[in-house]
Image (tube, rainbow, N blue to C red; front, top):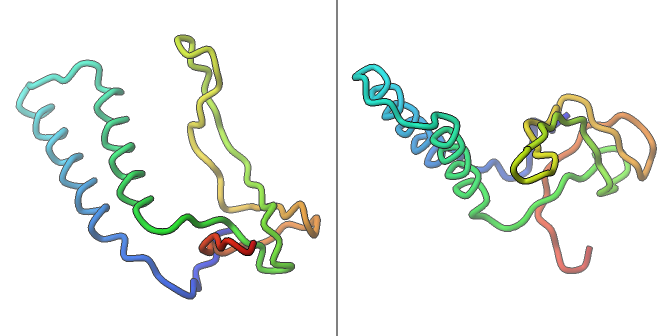
Length: 117
């Protein structure tokens, strides 16, 4: 599971505010009868914006709290995209993680990727 006690807490407020504003705009459009078609495209646009906003810092990776390994895996759900003919990640379940380096269920912290690693 994602370690709550991170050494450097990221300030997620700006991207979260932007996401909330976008969702509020979408909700108001729906309430006022301004239908955006297709809805999934607009929700994807908001999710992509949030991802870009959160990815603006240095690259990070999960590091096992037990052994320091970086081969941490989590379960995920994927949906088949007929047009792209491939699986697209829908969501990841970060509550349970497995470290392939020490072969145990572990907690992990997201740490910056360094050139030495």
